[in-house]
Image 1 (cartoon, one colour):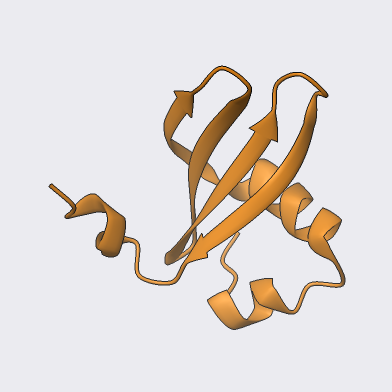
Image 2 (cartoon, helix red, strand yellow):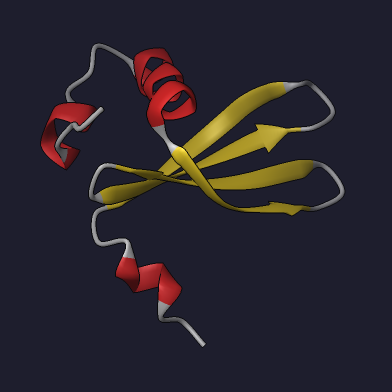
Length: 75
């Protein structure tokens, strides 16, 4: 499903954004630390990073990247 960056930001609440990302996002990468898991998804023409608390089993934060190439080109 295609959604614009603007429309994604204007979904009713964070839970709606999480749900949309999990339902329609394409997993790009995943990284785990001692207490958190960072999961990067491609959604339409932007990317969403969900930060998951491993201890409490819940999403604790989200970062949006309007230009998906900004993080792919970091060396």
